Image 1 (cartoon, helix red, strand yellow):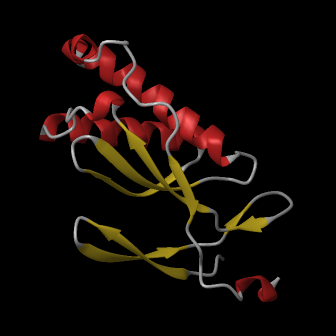
Image 2 (cartoon, helix red, strand yellow):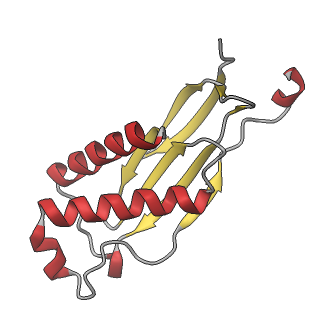
Length: 144
């Protein structure tokens, strides 16, 4: 049974506390969480529509099932997205970002073809992004 670790995330002005379980793989135990920020190309405000935001969340749920990612929180201000996600240590943080950005862009363009016309280069996300690890306060490694 995993040991819970309390986490507080800031989302749209609210503090939300989550219990994050220690995950187990064949030869390790881990709690790896990332805070990622993706900007829409040219900072266009294309994620204000509730329907589009819900579709983005659905895509992330499917990505989570396929790649065993745990999405703790998703938030948007229209021109960028904040993602709090947990992933296994076999995935480098840049790979997690690449997987999320590529699959969400492909599906958004498929469902909303008019968006591609608003983005001159035909890319949904700007290059790069922000990645930070979300710490657990330390001291938990002593239990292993």
